[in-house]
Image (cartoon, rainbow, N blue to C red; front, side):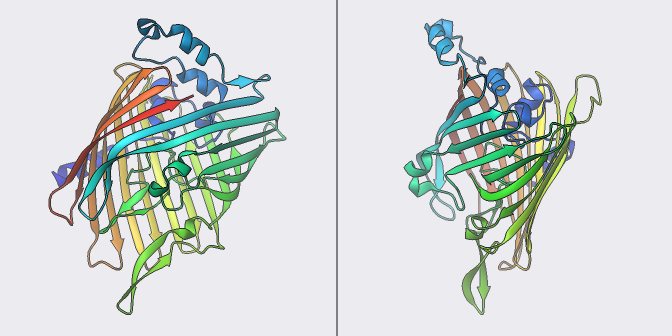
Length: 399
């Protein structure tokens, strides 16, 4: 089982993946457009542009006519912008039930409001706009906050010249890995002997400045400098003179450099869309690198994934694979399977820690802007006897 799973992961990773907050939508339903076609953030995720909102608002498994709610949804989804698109708003809300870890080999089922994010975009001119969000769930679920998680992010975009790069300033996520909507993926954390080590923290943000270049249709480039203050709150366990201690992942007064590049080549075969790219983050003796590829047929299937490598000198090395195959039954019914592998080499342990994860699930868009996510997960941590499995349900309201 373990050898077969690893083989599947390696094959799928090197066949394909790409880089959107819900990556399969780009290949399946928007025919290969960039992240910036639907999101303000060129990396994807967060506030949606007017075209991004329009592309998803009417998809539904249940026809509102069947339940007498046609007028309700027509009024609710009439618009998301005002003053000639100078003011744009939106939100994401997620509720989930799952089993949360309560020990090395135990867990308990619980419920959580994961996200209550209103978004606001203000664009007074063509060359200047502001975007920001605040996660209200951060104040509600205080006992389920994640290490280095931040409740808000915001930025100002400046682009005085149409053919030159834009400048982004503010408090936001550096370009580290793909922008997935699932923070539990192995490319987001490394499975350790006890618990897990975050690689790209959930809802992570830092003060930073970033340059983005999007003027070529098949090319997307970003580079920036960011504070390491929030990342410095993460610790790596370490044994010094026989005593348990820890070291900071980065120093609290440090600066990190991050870069991202993505190309979307012309169709290799008629109708086939693809992507490739990578990111790199460096702060002193710690780095996070990733590569990603993508392959798919619009309205049929998408194959996406990522390989991530991180290293803290003389402390920790992690290697992670994640890949996901999605088949589109209809626009509103998207079953998928994801295979993942994590390898953690920690100087505190005599041997590496291996973990494998299989996820079977489906996105079911029951009504306009209402996504039901059902998953069954199988986690095998090879240093422990047996395996851990569970089902999880998530309800996602988006606008």
